[in-house]
Image (cartoon, rainbow, N blue to C red; front, side):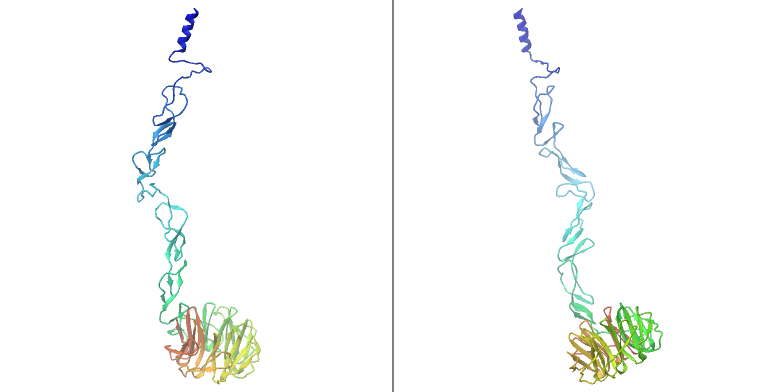
Length: 464
């Protein structure tokens, strides 16, 4: 019996399948995981022939512990056929579904594209249209216009611009030549006072003076005439409220001040509405200017009055009884000129000193530029001086009375009787210009890129 029991035990041990009972669960002994296209996972499966992969061969990807063939994909289009190497799917498009869209450099059908900028830095963000130009800044030589970089240019008003493209990121005003009536000054074309046109003033009274201030021209004249214009071409008549002739006008301290016959003084803040002020003189006043916070008016028999506001006036002692025709303010102070070559100077308009003037001509206007005084007067008189004391006479080319002078755009312009207009770049050499009128011209001013001259019978001339 012992031998028989032993044989049965051996038979059980040598059986094909031996089951051990461990914790109450059966475990297969001698099986392993398999993997068709890769490396199987280690361990013992619960059932025979169970597939479970740890990694995959090239061309296969691991999904849920199984190796499946990799694929070409394409979001938004048609992918390439076949299976890519490696262990992941690859996006590779051969065509795109959206109209006008082609695969990009990465072989993708992109529907969101970065902005580009050919000549600068592209703006941040994306757009659905490829190759869209949108710049936020530009390289030197280009300017930003409507989010695009365009080549910079030389520009020129009233002439021809220089050729080429300037550096930087903006256009540069630089003229090569100028149109008729304009002269080249510091690479810009400015009015030269050489070509004049007649304008309709709407009045027949003589106009004696003109000023530009607060963006308007104001002209004054006989019988209390006052005209205003924004451009020198179209004019509006304003009521002065007085019959007196107005001879001179200036602008300063945000105030227009006009003076004239019988010591009349009018003030206005806008050139439209005028108020009569007391000047405490009955002498005719021929000239007025503003400087150093002071209005100074001059007139008959050496009259000089001053005011800080144009309303309250004080008499000053000129030291002469000669007629004073004009007064200007320069960086040295005030200078007044008048009959028989009279020249007076004052630092503040209160105390006046007579300067020696060797000529004896009647002087009607004066300008001071580049350390040179230029005075004009009767009989075509033109004088220059470096100090206001020693004067030199120059040929004007006319014997007509010269009644006014201005300096603008590196050019002196003098006006006078019988439509006389002269121009000079240095105050010494003068050229006659055609005015188109035979009327007397009394005043000249510059503003809004335009010279405007006024004279008898409501004459108004402009030069661009």
